[in-house]
Length: 130
Image (cartoon, rainbow, N blue to C red; front, side, top):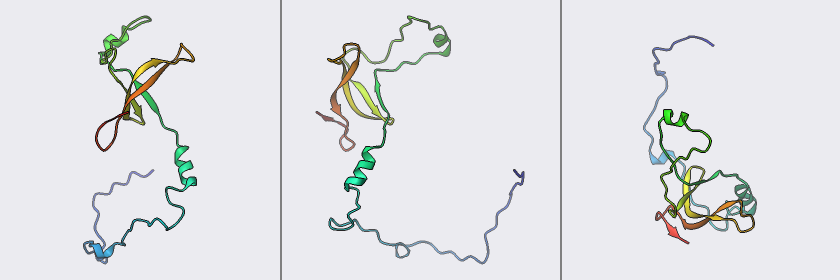
């Protein structure tokens, strides 16, 4: 790798420029319903989208503590969270809250928890009950 430092850049005097205006750009039109069959609604494209993995997190709560207190934690220590029993918990997909729900015990396997959705978060109006 070179240690060259560029301290001055001059524009090429032979290049002519002009401000951009709408006439310089191609028009983009929405596709009509009877246009190209390879649109986003196509089953092949939909299958591609449905195969994308997403990261789902169920957030029971959070806590803030000093590093000194964190280092004192040991087996059996309890960290109080900011959510109370009975409050809805957040369901987060790829870092964005998409729903809220409540913790339930899975009927088929009493050793597992699940989440019963009580609210779907809509991008348009902020929330939609289900």
